[in-house]
Length: 547
Image 1: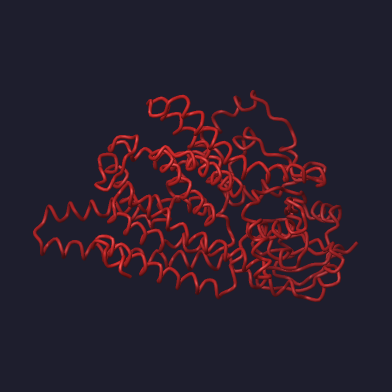
Image 2: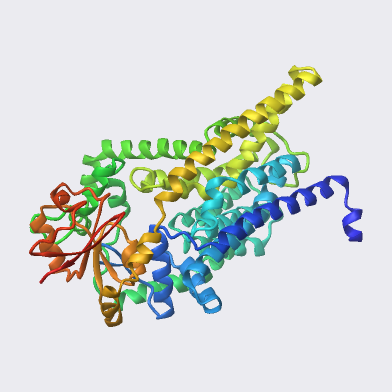
């Protein structure tokens, strides 16, 4: 306590604000933890992979009938924590919550270093209470863990550059390897590290000898964390049948437009002419040469542009549109801002914004090329790791705006103007949160599937470990501990033939499924010679296949 009272007033306020915010944030997270974790589509994959890891396997059965490999670090942590919690779902949620909370540490350190204590405090409020950040910090997703690793890597790379530390470069490599094993976008961390190492060499901040030593430390740290796990994943392929075709960079660039929900469903579910395979899987198995990319160059450029626009739109959505304006302001003024608390750094004060900006630019470029915003549902989750950085710029824009208002008005008018502006922003924020909650949370409510999975009809086949369910959603197969086959798009006879070739036991026909050929079965309780009606719930009908 004595040391606390010896701190100057600035740091006393900093500690008080942090304790207050951690208390509120902790209360929200505790409430979320006391409730059953929300299970999303990808959550089922992470949990199943964690179960497989405990059995010594690093691949997981996916809903198109193939075995797939996903970045395994998050699932590995789930499998370890499950030994204590004895529940995979709770283990996954706890890892997300802990990582999401710990991410505040590197976030506040970065904000304070580059923009000062005032901006850091406001940025902490903006991102800790961001609806999307809270949602994904409590869900079974990799977002919270990756955010912590991503921000930690940025801060460690900054320390490595400013202190010329061999240990920090080694740590940057180790954290980068863990981030890469958490999400594919983690590759930008070693890429950014190599970029800034090269910049130091070109600016003559490093001699060739230092460049080699620091580069070696970075690579050793990367290999120590990344190589062993990737080697195990590669070796596991030898004992894994029916592997999903590898998705090359060329294939990723040439994937068709999937923004339209109906087009997306047809693309993923349409069968080949012989009805034996999904058409997009057959497409992945064919070779794609440079000439094909050159032929499709217009679509590839258009797709990249679509993704860039999608990133901007999703960023605006995450910050409720009105706060997005302050992000733009913050980005522009950060170029000419010098932090009074800045330490020795190889970049000039007016160039320091380039350091953090480079990570955001690499992050956005990855998803512009990978197509994360031209098909997947709820793409806002991909931007969660940069919410803290965007919050810094937003806070900078807000503080600058308030300062300009105070310069243009007398004190009473200034107070009134700021109060009115703050009230308007608060009301818009609250209304937007309510509207998002009404749309977003019910969309992922899967309690009905959990109850349906407890039916006795599934118990016998579960014990034999070979239950197969055909459906659009992965939730019923997940809760029933069954293998899923994605409902194909085609004529009724083709669908039945495909289901029987995959040895499907039960078919769940969702009301939301786009299938004009199956409309005669929806909202009815009829059976057909091939399908025996079992029961009907709000989401759709359950049938048993007749062989």
